[in-house]
Image (cartoon, rainbow, N blue to C red; front, side):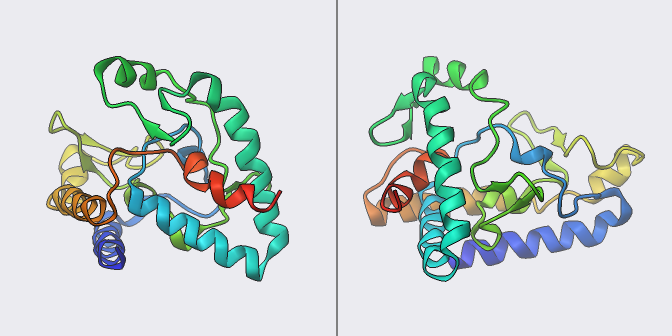
Length: 201
C-alpha cells in the first residue's frame, strides 16, 4: 500500500515539475473535493487508520470529521447506488448510470469547510493525489482540472501528462490488496469512515 502511495507521489511530482505555472492547485482550492467518487479498499483502509490516529492525537478535529461523515451519510443513504450495509458501490450497468447523477454537489466529509483543506491529507486517496495534471481517460483523451492549463497549448498539456503507466500500476496494486484482504468492489469516503466515526458518537 505504501509503495503505491510513493509511486503516485513521484508521478505527481514529475508532472508538477513539467507543468510549471499551468498547474495552479494550492491549499484552499477545494473544487475537486465536491462530488463523490469511488475509492479502492486500500484507500479506505488508509483513511480509516489515519482517522484512528487523529482521534488519539486531536480528538476535536476527529469529532468534526465524524459529524460531517454522519451528515453526509444522511444525505447519501437514500440514493446510494449500491449496498448501504457494506458501502460497496453497485457494479452493474444500472448502478453505473445512477452514479453518474449521484451526489455531484456533496462535499467530501474530510474537507475542512472553513479552510478548504483536507483534514486527512497525508492519507488522501490515490485519485486525490494525482488529480490536476493531464491524465488519460478511458477514451484516450487527456483530462485536466478545469482550473488548470487554461492558457496551455495542446502540446504543452501533452508534455505534462501524468505517467501513463500509473493507472495500470494502481489497478494491479488494488487487485492484489483486495485478493489479500478478501475484498471486492469500491466504496465512498463517507462509507469508508462510517464504522470508525460511529465509535466516537
